[in-house]
Amino acid sequence: MSSGMIITIIVIVTIIILAYVLSILARKRNETLLDQLEERKEALFNLPVNDEIEEVKNLHLIGQSQVTFREWNQKWVDLSLNTFADIENQIFETEGFNQSFRFLKAKTAIENIDSQINLVSEDIAEIRQALVDLKEQEAKNSGRVRHALDLFDDLQQKLSENEASYGSTLPELQKQFKHIESEFSEFVTLNTSGDPIEASAILDKTEEHMIALSQIMDRLPNLMEKLVGTMPEQLDDLNSGYRKLLEENYQFPEDDIEVRLQNVRSSIKDNLMTTVNFDLDRADAENERIQDEIDSLYEIFTKEISAKQEVSKLSKVLPDYIAHIEKSQSKLQGEVERLRQSYYLSESKLGQIQNLVAEFKILKEDVQHKIDYMNQPDLAYSQILDSFKAAQLQLSDTEEGLISLADYLNSQEEHETNARNKANGFVNRLHTIKRYMEKRNLPGIPQSFVNHFFDSSNKVEAFLGAFEPQRIDMEAVNRQLEMTTTAMEALEEEAYQIVQDASLTEQLLQYANRYRSQEPAIQDAFTASLVAFEQYFDYALSFQTISEALERVEPGVTERFVNSYIRTREVIR
Image (cartoon, rainbow, N blue to C red):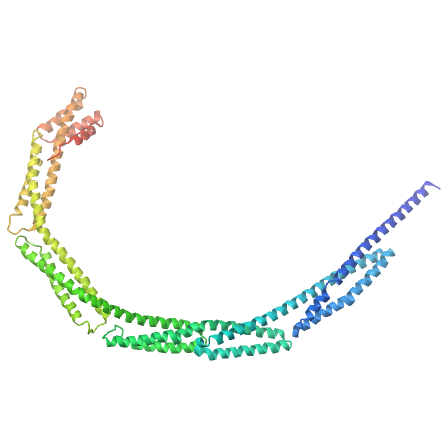
């Protein structure tokens, strides 16, 4: 046998062996897949769907819920009896394909079985979820019904326990209860007849009615208490109080109190009808308005009662206040007559006194008239009180005016004494300034200072002359005092400046000796400064001339001398 033949045989044998091995592996793989499909089928079939269906069946569903349940139950029956059996047959048939090495058909069949099991799994999931939904819906419906019934029972109990607090709204509340009972009956009829959707809508509406009614019942007692209790009682109190105040001669600024009281009574009656019709928001708002009006009327009455009490107090205080001011006024007028003997008094001040006296007389008469007739007034006590308070303020202003004028009068003698002392001081000051200048041993006194000195002396003499008349004009005295003070202050300042310029010039001239031989400019300045000092008595020019020359040679020297002089300067005493 040739080698080529041997090789061919070996190749064929190898192919056969490989084909066999591959066939064995393919069959084994298919067997595994089929086992997995069988397990999935069994797991689905063993789900507790039957138990869940039985649970829902025991709920005794009616109407649309029962129809829905039957549809899902039938779908489960179809799956459990037909689809699972069909899957089982296909698995058996596929196992035959696999055993007979018909792998292509086996693969296709396995894929079909897998797809079918997936569909079954989805269908079962839908069935189970539908069953859950039915149970939850039933539980929800049952719970809603129980909740609605409990709410209705609570409302009935609330009504029976608080009938009195609902007053005239009770018939309308009972009418609403009957309406709710009718809706319950309609709900039961529809639910029993197999129309759960419409029944649910009726139940929703019934619940809404009960919730709204519960809120109304919560608000009604407070509203009714105000409308039939609190506010009518307040109105009766206002009416009786108003009649009593009129009997006691009370007057009121408002002329419509009777009408307002009647309007309140009508408003209470009208708002009671609004409340009976359950327009509670409007009733609440109207109650607030009515209460505000009642409070306003109480305020009017209370204001007048309080005003009468204050008027009574002020009727005792004001006469004493008037007597006090009369005493002050009399004293002031006496002081005016006394001071007129010695002083010319300001016409404006005297005019103020006359005005105060005239105004006080009118005010006194007005207050006395109101006090005399305050128990039979033609005005409201609040208006009388306003006028008393205004009078009290006017009396206070009058008193302040009298005090101010008394201060003015009292100041005349004090100002005279002070002015005389100052005049004597000015005389002494003139002598002191003169001695101060003489002690300096200056070569001469500047003519401007001499003129200023004699002018100041003349002002002091004129100032002293203002005290000579039998009746002193203190306004003229004060003007003279101001002018003389200004002149004396200027004279003293000029004296200081002349002495300072002269003293510093002497010091700087002595200091300049060290530079005269070396600095021609210093020599020239020295000579000019000395001429201004000794011949013209212009000490300011003399100081300026020498200081400017020294500053050019030795900056800062002038400031040093000035600072030293100021520290040791002699004061005019």
